[in-house]
Length: 173
Length: 144
Image (cartoon, rainbow over all chains, first blue to last red; front, side, top):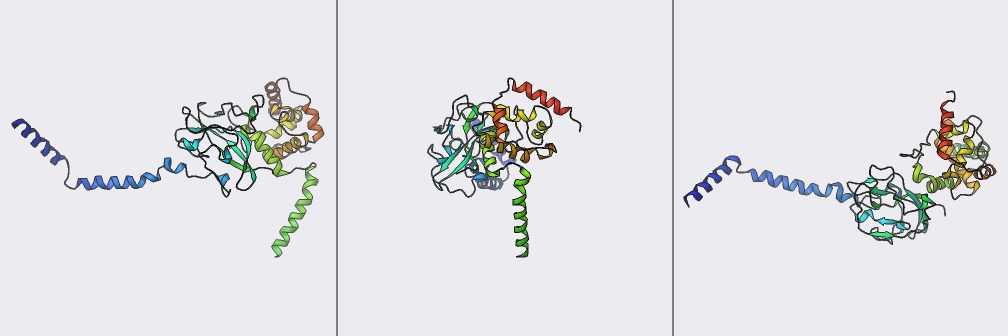
């Protein structure tokens, strides 16, 4: 008991010597400041960032569903379900500059838009929201219009993670 | 109002002058969309290329200065195999050359015609990379 008493006293005096009486205020302030900064981190904001080419386009449907109009020729995992968005890559992946490009019909305004399916590369396949729609997909002998190829070309890593669908223009009627 | 009148006049002059200068009709918007759908995936939005995809920006017009180059731009598989009719491919090439490599065009540049494109398309290249390397070598030897 005596030893326990001595040890407790030593520990308590040690803590008192090393810490200040109002030090907890500093800790509380830091916690409050970091809690308010959390929503500003890029991870949470990526999903709500619209792509430049899509500004002003009437929208309908759920961008995390395979039925969404921009995914008419997609074959892969939706980046929106993987920590990115329909137009941006999840953290830790690199967007492939080389892509396959087609058009999709937007039911909200009845027009056709040119869509670029840029793949996000550099991490193992995401595994969320697998979509296979393949409208306008062509056989392997037309590689520029085939979506079974790995389009992680021109990136540091050729490992496929997920696919985006970026509006790059208005198509011909 | 005066400024608007001047601007309108200018537009009319430009509108009339353009088809005369171009020689062949180019629908800019259609050509750009054809480029997007058939070229941009690899050559990127301004022809800058990436990795093994050659850069066309500020370069591709040089092919028209050397023998065989004019044919090559039609025969190269990306052009020859594009799902575009001869007229649309001619339009796309003419638009692209003016858009991304105007300063390299020869002084006597003539726009491609549909007939010309049709003729070159029937003569496929046996070895694309070798042909290209030879043409690029000829371009390098051109007087500056």
